[in-house]
Image 1: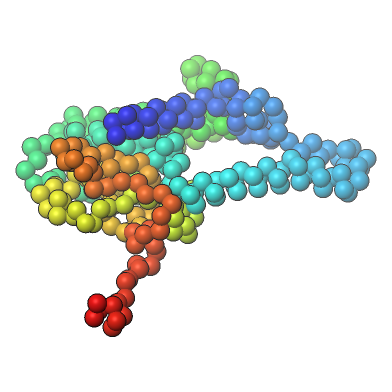
Image 2 (image 1 turned 90 degrees about the vertical axis):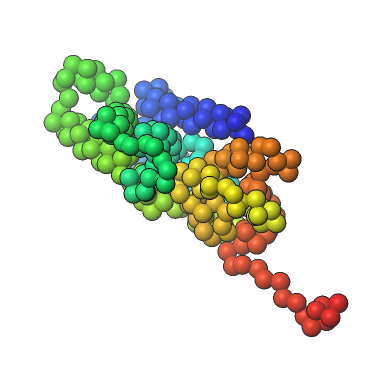
Length: 309
């Protein structure tokens, strides 16, 4: 699982840099100054100029809208729905820049304060006592990331190179300055106080993924080997402590609605059970309908005949 988490770190890091560099490389952005999308270096527009519409038939106009807008949207949404339905919040755990920040700040807070969020109590026996310096580091890292995010998002709306040059030369407009300041403050508050709560309840993309995932009883899910549950009695819940979303990872699927498929819980259990020849009690199950993957628990009902046997 170490290689697994390493590979996940590589994909998240690569996507984070892609998120920041996509506008600079003209891979994808919306240019407010020209009011059109830029995709792979090309302006993406319907080209429905008044002259073209007057010289075209209604059928030609309809086909252009269909091929350039409707079909691409259907393909993108349809592909996304299939991925969510089959693998759940795989985007969140493997690519999402926000979830990458969640895990990063979680790790820093765990090392500095002994707890992952300010809402949790320090575990009994913990020797970690957060100092002013520790909180300065936590907030400082959050501010730097928040500023990077704010600038990155603005570069999706305005030509990025002129924007960066204006920033270096302290020549930003009032609107640009206001956007960066407000966005930096909002992201900082999110990263410090409510980062995983936003993922759970505030992210429409995340909830959208979870809804389609819950519809599929055969989707990928982290399952708990209940037949070996006695091995957990001497464990200090490392799996639940490792979960960035603070979920009951040994519960049924319906209790893990916001699972991001990051497998941090599995990695923790693998570490705890490293000397056990039977391995981890947690593992991914894909393609098999079980009690844990059903929204409504399945109960085996014995008939009078079966009881006599």
